[in-house]
Image 1 (tube, rainbow, N blue to C red):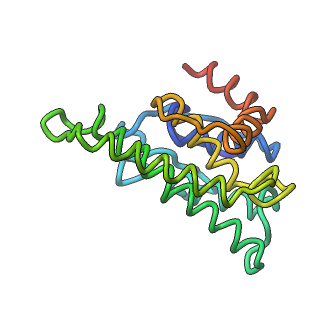
Image 2: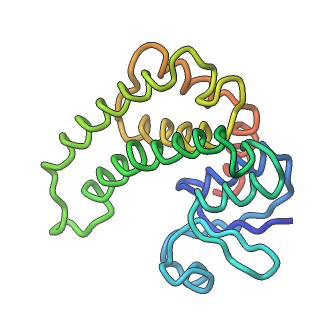
Image 3: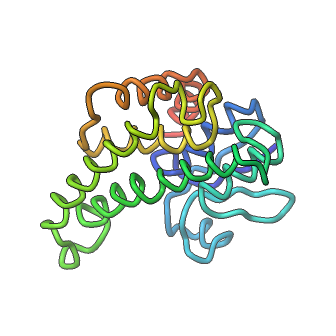
Length: 200
């Protein structure tokens, strides 16, 4: 059984969603960032963390990649062209979606008030709109970013879509919105949400 340290209302949900997709057993220690038990396993105090055989893996994408590779699910094999394209979409999610949402969040409620720059938020929304146009072009008519196969790239993009909606970043009408809705309708996400609700 895997142990996940982190609060579900964070990138920790990516890990819980993946564990459900893979059908793996896990327990959750619902800790928030910078708590003592988090610092005990991650010097940065950030979440999530995954405990495996007494070792700790940090960062939601690193954790998801490790689990997908280890259990041969939701990923193409390393060293293949398909994996390179998959990783390209994963990096798109991190560079063109996650980073925008994170920047907006930092200047909304995370940074101390005297360190916030409210004027940066319109720029974040501008960048988000540009990213959504890029995603529509790259997605094309595919069901998932890699065609008919749901991968961790879709999962991370899907989590960013949840985050965007909560942060009032608009989903574009058309194929991207339909794609987001398909991802969020995954039964594994519903199971992860149900278990997460029990922790709060």
